[in-house]
Image (cartoon, rainbow, N blue to C red; front, side):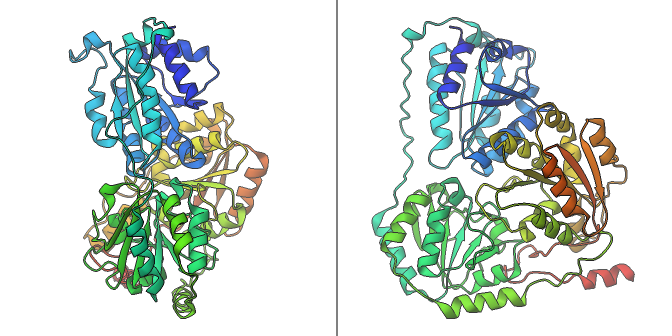
Length: 562
């Protein structure tokens, strides 16, 4: 068979059923083979959407998403999505076309050094220069992407390797990966030491990160917390690791986290961080982070242990396996004074919001979204204020139902990620919550949604601003500059131009019914929601402790009036 047919064969052996892609000249042999296969191909309208869709597919399903782009500009267009997946530890395979091996390095048409470009932003990359290496590298790529700390792997495919013939009986690929042996089981002495600290602590908190979801450890997390009566805070990537309606759930920490959760973190005497990397948005002031706590960190990636915050008890291991060890060894405890204290703070710090206003408060839109969805509805967000409104106020009930770009903060992520999630979970309702800025980066993907009959509901929180940058300028800079979106299209008409239903919501009570009707119809729908452009997010000012959160912006309003 040809190299392209061998590639298809290996992709199928590794469970690939769908590829999100955009063709190009050097990939013509691959598309010939793809046409003859039973792998579905979703033709996106921009390569960046292909990699975000593969990412969304992976996050919603727990499987490896696959995307494809041609050489040169096709490969460079997917680098943002590769970096997004890399920062959030999302397992994807990115296939890129490349010029023939005898032309590499000669600056021929549509040639770039894809290996050099993607090396810093991928977990690993390969460039097979023989048919034998195609078989070897595909198997290795899927193994590396999905084990240890997951991440994106790039396979750069020279054109000639796809065209040449090979006798597959002569191929005996070496799938060994010397030097790559991820540690799954934590050190038993370190686990014992951690258990002793947990058993004697009076004010412990669990901090659950994205690693809990990636290792499918949510059940173990809740079981451990329930046995020990330890409240759980989450990072942005950890949303959904525990139902945010659970009595032990504190909500999200960080720069735009829940005020009461941030206070709890500064008061705790034992912090058990599971699958989180202590990003700057979660920590803020490094020197005063959980200042009274003995810190235990569990992470499958040894490079993350102590990288940002000094750790007292490091445990390198898989979250699910390690939590099962904790469950076996920990004492059943009851800390009523501590949990009651935290719940009292949570009640006292509950924001007082007048929802019945026009223009709509963002908090009202989130409230109506929660009333319209079910616990299994998959929600993706874009990046900016829309993302943080959702992260702050939307209560996620299940893992893999809240999909968002965390580490890279990629505008334009939300809509194509929803496409991937919908392909992965065709029977589920999928809602993309995006801003008017990020939506305009990828609005052409409405054509992809229409062509593939994806019943995605897109909710645009339209405040006519690049809201997050505008907020930061208002609070910390002298001028609000270059953030007002004065000339934006009529999003309802834009949706209709793509043959998709468009709706506009401007008053309280309308959004809930509009979303519910859209879900019932199982037709793609774009909802343009006019929201208050002056509403600001709670924020921890840069460099401040987490418990110094700014939630009252009346002083800013007085300055504006002056």
